[in-house]
Image (tube, rainbow, N blue to C red; front, side):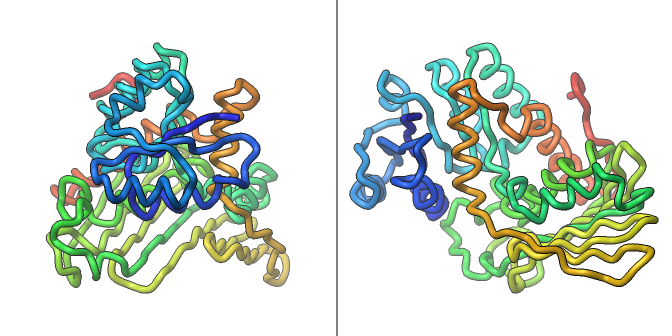
Length: 330
């Protein structure tokens, strides 16, 4: 049983704890830390954990095997590097970091320390995403032409000014950091690395100074074209569509639905199982820490996703196509 500490008490720390605590045979949250005494006391009572009074105390505790980071994006790299130095495995929520350079530094620190680094890109575990991957590997789309995705929610309409997400440092290009990064990772999982991006981002409706409407064009290294839309101010939407000479497919990711339009026949709905993706990613993290399995999101893919995000933020600022930095590039 992997003994983990939950770091950062917010709504997502509870989502992860709800998925694993008392349900998983592979991982258990045994303690927690956040700067707010009231929040960590509430978490400890709700999930039956101990509490630590500092992150440093967590890292010094030899009974703890791993940390689960649901902290502000800008703190991730430093926290990951510190955990690696202490010999702790790391599960880090997305986005991994805010720059490619910091992401690579964190990856390098974990590799040098021999600890597992896992990024919480749970949409890779959705059955609809896995079904699209199987279709691509089987050649069902013929020549793949284009892929598009959208992940949008209305949550930023209610953001207070003092929320840590309510600024352009933690939320560059608006919902890309909270939502779009999920779909960037899913598209990379399905179609491989992205070579260049063009983007636009605007603030139209939210009360705080972040963008709420972002659209991105991609060119994958394979030559496939792509599109991402992500809004912080409209009803929930979550889909990935793939188009090819052999057919098209529309996957409603969070609703676990898949409609296939083959070139040689009528459209059909494929049966898709709803899965607890948070439980699956945490169990796989624990298995990776035990040396029993490889974590689905490779560290190279984790760094690439941040390179894509960094490039699209630059593209939105300049109005130009921006190349995605590759391995060894700044």
